[in-house]
Structures are given as C-alpha cells and as structure tokens.
Amino acid sequence: MRQYLSLVGVWVMLAAGSLVVHAEDRRVVAPSVEDRRIGEAIVQIGGRFCEYHRQDVDGALRRFVAVQHVEFLNQHGTVLVRYQKESVSPEQLAVAVERALAMGWNCKAWVDRGG
Image (tube, rainbow, N blue to C red):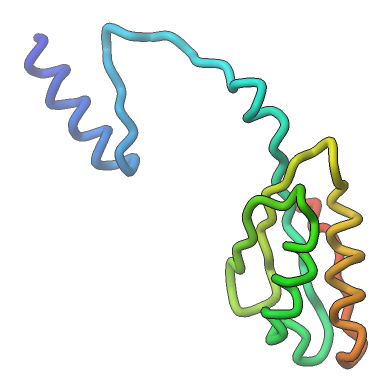
C-alpha cells in the first residue's frame, strides 16, 4: 500500500508541476506574515498601440519602491504586478501607467478586477 501511495505521489507531483503531496502529512500551512503583505494586481492597457510601450510601462511601475515584480502576461496589454500592499494601491499603479503612456493615442490603464 505504501508503495502505491508513493507512485500516486509521484504522479501528482508530475501532473501538478512539482507539487509534492505526502499521504502521511496532511498539514495545511498558512501563509507567512510576509506573504500576506504582498499583493498582486492585473493592470490592463488599452488604446491604439499602447500595449507596445513596454519599457514605459515597466519604468513607471518600477519607480514605486513597493513594486517587486512586473510581468507582461501577453501581447494585449495585460501586466501582472506584485507589490507591497501597505505602500501602494492597485489604482495608483494603473494611474502611473496611464501617465507614462500619455503621449499615446488615447491610452488608458485600469485595474482588472476579473469581472
């Protein structure tokens, strides 16, 4: 039985992208205090050719000391930003991006709330 569980664990690990599951260990680990202070926001960019100004967007976001990570998720102006929640709001990030793109053709930036 233990060998079967071990094989199932390996399969789960491969299927889930290196997720390790132990049948004997059923603990749920709560996020650390540091993890709870980190937020993620999706900033959408819209307008004519505005999504191609990646350097401007990246620079505007990285001016915030609170921003830890900027990742362009696709070619259509979707940007994932990881930041310290106490220092900046997602709306402030979007405003900074929109200001950086002010020279574009009606460029807009907003926080995607998934709705």
